[in-house]
Amino acid sequence: MAKRKTRTIVLCLIILVGLVLLWRGIWEMSERFFGPEISILIGAILLAIVGIVSREFLFEHI
Image 1: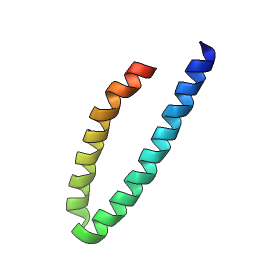
Image 2 (image 1 turned 45 degrees about the vertical axis):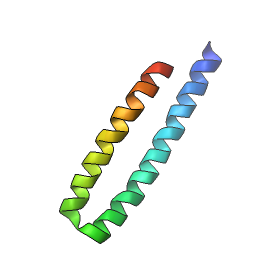
Image 3 (image 1 turned 180 degrees about the vertical axis):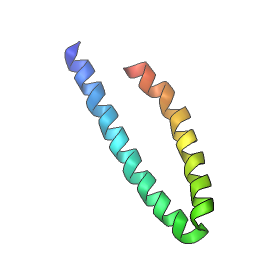
Image 4 (image 1 turned 180 degrees about the horizontal axis):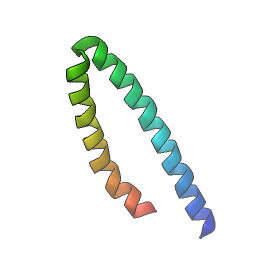
């Protein structure tokens, strides 16, 4: 049981690091092409989508 919980925590940390890196890259690209205002809007939409999608996955495995 403890081994499974540790594995789940490590998996969640890997997912979070991947999301942060992806977020950072998308943020910089969108700011370069669209400007800061549109970049903020795109970022908020992406964050909402990631939250909705990952919520079910994370709560099932924690």
